[in-house]
Length: 297
Image (cartoon, rainbow, N blue to C red; front, side, top):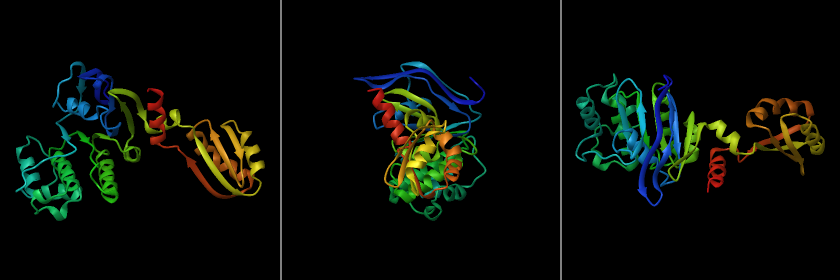
């Protein structure tokens, strides 16, 4: 295994019949950072994570994990003894582990936003609070690899934002592999993304590369001034594939998102138009995912 990879799978198969399961998945998860596994419900995400965590066996293929320490997994619906408090659950986990990190139970609960729930019995926790507690328990053993299955699925928008910020922070010190069917969540925090669809890996690489490859880089530029002249000037640029003028606006298509982000500001300044707004159209992970999966139907 390459020294810069935490996880490698080759030809991983788990066949449940009728097309369900995994069908030859080759995964390469870089060491460090956040790796997002995205796909609709039933795509095989949980099966793949369970095999990597050692909770299920593959029918064929291999999975190699190369990390210096334990692997922790937090399922989408973790369960704990309802009569224990949040602090007792984390303390118990630290006590049972052969290795644990320097953070105390109180510090781990504060890290996941449950400081005020430390002495409350977990039987009264909401599902979102239980998910956060599951992450605290997983972090208690100081794992270099943390696997999270749908870690923000039960949270409201504010709670999801906090959870994603936490995942991003965790990824600065260890490898995080998390699954989600919420594409915006993956785009916000993942360095690398894999698209799993009907048990097959359709794409793997940087989020930006997925968007650039499967989404037409398109912007709407609203201006005060001569939109026709601006469109003509933009069409002369080598990084522009099309520029069409409308009523006070120009729709611009570029060779890539990166090229437009690098060149567009200077082009607008040279045109000496008054810019009202600049809006990217459909340049997101959801659009790329829909395009990619539609091609493979």
